[in-house]
Amino acid sequence: MEERNFFERLADISPGMEIWWDSSPVIFKNWCQKMIEKAQPDDRQLLQLQFDRMYNLDDPASQLFRGVTTNPALSLQAIRDDEARWNRVAAEIKEKSPGIDTETLFWELYKSVVKAGSDMYLPLFEATGYKEGYLSGQVDPRSVFDKEAMIKQAEELATINPNVMIKIPGSKEGYEVIEHLTSKGISTNNTLTFILPQLVDCARTVQKGLEKAKSNGVDLSKWRSVITHMESRYGDLGGLRDFAKEKGVELSDGDVRLAELAIFKKAYKFLKDNNLPSKMLSCSLRVGPTVDGHNRIWHLEEKAGADIIVTCPPSFIDQVLFLPDVDRITFEKDRILEDIPKDVMDKLMRVPYFERAYAEDGYSRDEYNSHPSLERTAQQFSNATEEMVKFAASCLAG
Image (tube, rainbow, N blue to C red; front, side, top):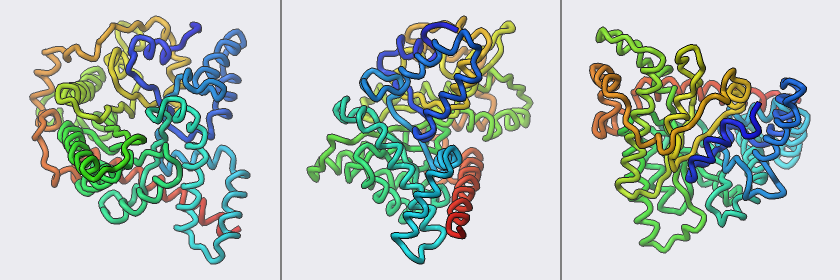
């Protein structure tokens, strides 16, 4: 194991890149301990030093993790990580609100997890002059098509801490919410986004909301905008291979990863060329493909030099840290600016499902809600949220 891990080396060659933790920060300490126990004895001290650099309360400005993404499902992971703690929190909520129902208890518990996590990143938020140290708290995934519900939830979450950024889905209704929140100076992270039309739509929507905020004299000193691209959820969950087969096109694992990267790179260039205030965020990352018998991580290698955010769940970090030959992977300066190979693009453009996703006007806003990636991801997130509701119900039942 090398002294500086894969993520540190990537950040070293990418001055504008922010590495974020994709889970509740409250699980970080226990996760580190599990990773230390898993490591070879000779690597444990080195690994501990790496973990100490990931989150450093004594010197937050120097730490690797510059922010956090989370949602109700990830908050449930935090609860499962220390059920005794959160049972006590639930009991306190019940005592203060006699007669509370299950849904309300779920929401109050979720806000408590958001509060605990965002508290942990307030020192970084303050040390960077409110530029970093944000925690994204998502509105209820079951409200993905309910504009008024999302606005109410978002405004409530935004009062928890000044570094709470609100995750809003890339549904038709979601972009109306993003414009509203931006006009109020509330930071947003556009999630459930898979295709270029969504990414471009969000950037333009944020710009419109920002113009309203400025004209109304809204304080924007603690405002940021992030646009997420859920990469493998487009290629894998969205069914790119299946749509390609319908057109007689066979796609390799590498082709699928490059398709996702093509969309991301085009969106990144659009934001830079138009001097838009939002920052791209890369998530739903995958290890792969295997090239000449060696593991590669194209989702990150191809972003070297990018002024972006990369958010990584504990499971992905675990996989990368212990990946055979990971220390052999090197980074090419400003690789983010390199085009996807022409032969791959020619193949991908024969697939209408990709061709539309890669065009700025490939989908109208009215079509976002029926895109396979959005439908399937929204359903998964809703199902996961129901699991947290079940936990609240168990607390209510005592």
